[in-house]
Length: 251
Image 1 (spheres, rainbow, N blue to C red):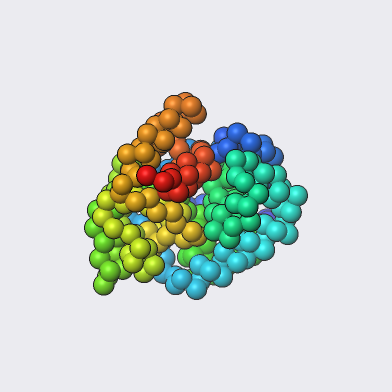
Image 2 (image 1 turned 120 degrees about the horizontal axis):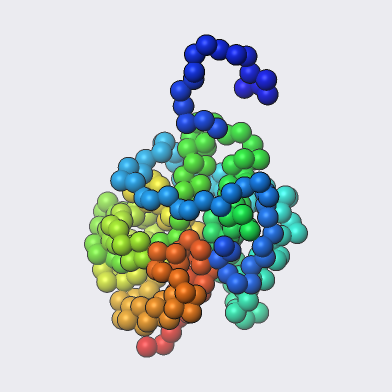
């Protein structure tokens, strides 16, 4: 559509055109953006058909976009994310991967804009299955799932998001082989048909550590003066590190 569209007698139908960590910078990606509250989850997750390869290509473009356009910002966000980490932890591949998932989908500037939001507006125009994958990425969320049922043959995990208090179905061939009912799983997720697809590096909390995890999350929420529903949205980095520490505890 051009910048000066022709007038028409008919009206066209259509849809029309807090930083998570205390240490994260308040740099604005787009000063005209207005912070929006997270939308309530709908029952229908399907947003278009795409394959795992489409998601990987889109996330590769997202990474290139961030490294090119936000080169000065990334080190600042990294310092906030790794503020409580050791030098050795800062070099671990799984923690570097966790940082980039947070950077793309969890970190917000002073106006509430995420890197994925900026990429959607200013990145390359995508079509077909890659566009569907991009739409899925814009709905990425961090979830802490209580595992109730694992079906290895169907690569299906059923459970409950304990922070959002809603039923969740995950589909992932790697996760089903590593977890058991009673465990908790912290992972970034994107819509996949009528289920959710884990992306990035997931953190498993064994069932025997669940009580310690609950106490740690309660303490964190009190310190942040936040309700549990806010933790995966406004305090994603804090939530990640609490879960990571408890997962590595010796009990």
